[in-house]
Length: 471
Image 1 (cartoon, one colour):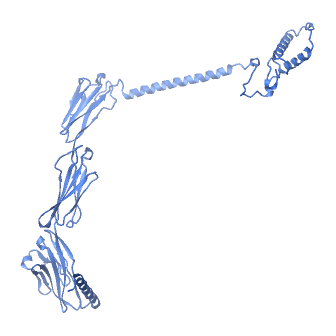
Image 2 (cartoon, one colour; image 1 turned 180 degrees about the vertical axis):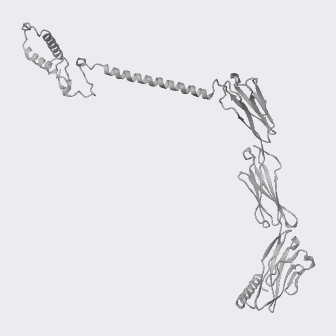
Image 3 (cartoon, one colour; image 1 turned 135 degrees about the vertical axis):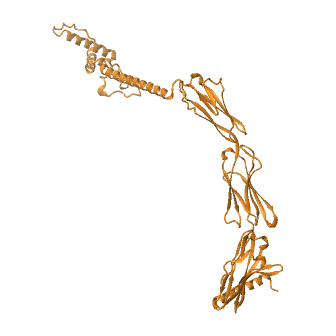
């Protein structure tokens, strides 16, 4: 006996040769075309396609469907072009030909059950060629029942990791593919449970540590299964319980003496909702003329200076009690009035400063104009430091020649200035006769040198530079 692989190869070769002969001869061939597999959903209808291709020289005598059972093959439907259709009693109420003809032998099976699983064969009888057939396998799918349930414990803000929600695809054949879609950093755990009739239930638990910031966000359970035409999606909204988150509105920081119709309202974001509100004053008793209406602290009179203080709002829900403190400062003036006062004071100070700068500028200019020029006699002997270069030769006084002492030059210059002054005073009268002063040897030559220096300088200033060997 040949191995099964060789037998399958020979069978496929025969079918290929038969199709090739049909293509070549055309008129003497018939062909039956059915899908290899058909998936039927439990409790729904399934269509078994059978297309008949009959040559022009052939005549269709009959088409039928048979089902293969362990005990043998049984006929479930027959179509005869001359006598019509025939359905056995066990299928008469849920099986029929869709549109019987010489080219179509398709049947529809209603309310499919597990007992309908098996192999079905479409047979076509032609004259004079005989029978041609093709088989298809029917598999029954069970569409899962999908639902989402919450975890066993409530989600509390700041609690430990817990099961947030469970997505269940119940009694599916084959097992459904279940997953969670979320932007949270949780994790999923998959569990499978076998049921009757070869079905399987799939449960996927989503585990996460609850936090109040994702209250109201959605998770999405996604189920994929061959019996479903598209992905089945079920949203689930998170319900995280948390203590009240309190905010106080109404105090704008510009409360001043005499302001009217002011109030503070305590607002709370809580899950479950807050059911207790209370206003108290921490630093003293609640002032008179103040009324508490639900969560609002209302001043029924103009504000006073002693209304300044610390006020506390307390809010509670089923989770916890929370409070928020507000420090109120009552000013003597409104913020607008204080801003105007500051603006006016700044303008006055700016004007005063500007006038002061103008006065200083004027004084400096007038002082500079009235200052006398520097006198020639104010000059003194200038001995420049070693790091400062000496003045140019054109500006220097005549140097004292070597061998002449500076005191002698100064004495001579002062004597000459005195004589000049006397000469200017007594210019109208003739000068008195000068006594001839005795001179020592060499005095005439030395005096002539002194007179030359005094004459060149025109004053008693004498430039002395030791580096040039002048005395």
